[in-house]
Length: 131
Image 1 (cartoon, rainbow, N blue to C red):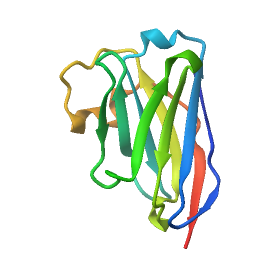
Image 2: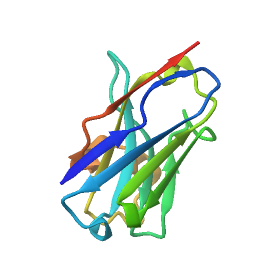
Image 3: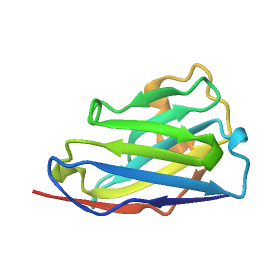
């Protein structure tokens, strides 16, 4: 299983950014859920958004970024996306994608945004937002 994030760059505050996470070495049809996390220097890894691929694409968003991000999936490309808008300097972090093959039917938002729920991770991509 391999996940590779891309799209990270230096962006200006107020701008937009789209991150991609492409998987290989597995069938995307077997993925239960996918998620995006971020980790700023000296801070814990934070869940941003998740999508339940086996539950009609149910999406969850962290309160800290609700309304500014959107998660989506393209099964044909084995890719998960994270679109971010109205970027802030506080969004500066390394962004990670993660997946689990477990089913997560009926699991709530808080649980779906916990790092421990995901077994496979990308290496991360740096996003830096300048003021």
